[in-house]
Structure formats: structure tokens, C-alpha cells
Length: 257
Image (cartoon, rainbow, N blue to C red; front, side):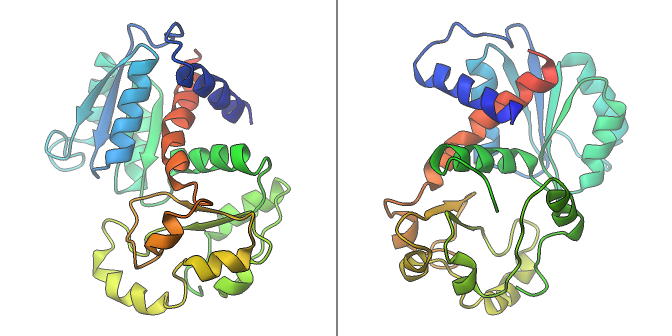
């Protein structure tokens, strides 16, 4: 909550046009992108710039960790030039290795295991619109993650029926059925997830106060309809904006600013 509260505070400052808060002045960030992403790239670079810093983009052709150069070597080289590293990679082990060998903070911009920056943006969005945060066979949440959430006092119910799932929900959250690197499963998943597309009818079952969220990019007409994502109760684009504000708070936290 400390990081989320900081995100709300700094977001208000940025939205007001106040640019006097420059905690990252004179600091630089290396951004490693093994997997491309418009939102992650722009939100991190813009956020770091708005708070006074400079970000360096390193795309898939610039760094080929584990192929052209050892991940542990990349970690130490970039740490010599930068105050912080953000990495969006395929293998979660790459993030673990970067964090192990880099003497500067390393932020997970996404791996094949999790996407903590997106989770923080989602939590911030729910906090703003709902005021509190609560929460298919073969695709259930990771058991370890569920166990951690329950041990922290969260109530979690798992169902494979979308109609049952949305009843009384404050937020209906969907995502692409096949992510980057899973395209070979795309057709299979379309068959498995038949009936899980979020449309206006499903949102009506959730109730008039339910919000729709999606981390984007969306495949309209697959996991969500155009009508649902463009409806007044869709908070998809405020959610996307909150990536920057949540990440700013994370960077402030790890840099002690």
C-alpha cells in the first residue's frame, strides 16, 4: 500500500502540470527489451523523464542475453553506466540473474512467470475506481501465488464458469488468450476458451457498477468485444495510463527517492 499511495501522490502532481519534483535528475536507466512492448517502453521512458531522469532503450538486436553475451556480464556492464535497470524478457531466470549480478536495482518489466508492474497498475486502478481490492480448467492461477494471497488475508474463489465468476463482481478482468511466444497455442486456446469472451451481455450479468479491465493489447472480437471495451464502464485506458504512475512509484521506492 505504501507504493500505491506514493503512486497516487506522484500521479496527482504530474496531472496538475507540476514538474518541480525531479528526484531522478542526473540518473539514467537501462531498459532491456527482449520482448517488444509499446506500453512498457513508453510508460517507463516517459515516467523516468518526467521525474528528471534519462532512459536508454536496448531492443532485441542490441542485447541477446545468453546468446551473444552472458546475462551476468550484461548486468555488471549496464550497472557501470546506469543507476537502475528495467528488463522485459522471456525467461524469468534472466531477471533473477540480472538481479543477482547487478549492483543497481533491477525491475521486472515482464517475464514468462509474472508481470508485477502490470499488477501494481491494476491494483492502483481498482483502488481509484472501486476503493478496495478483493479478489478454465488447466488455466487456473499459479498455486503458489494463490497460497501467498490467501496467507495475506485475501479471499479467492476459482471457477470455470464465466457467468458464475462475474456475479456481484466489482471488476471483470480479461486478457489475450495467447500471449507473445504462445502463438502456436492460439487456435487451441480459442477452442478451449469458447464462451469466455467478455461482451455486453456478460457485463450486464456482473451488474451496473462493474468495471471492465484489460491489460492490452486486446484482440477485439476474440477475448473481448468492441462494444464492451468502448462502453462507459470500461476503465481499460485509465488502467493503461496507470502503468506509468505505478512504475514511477516502484522506481522511487527502489532508488530510495
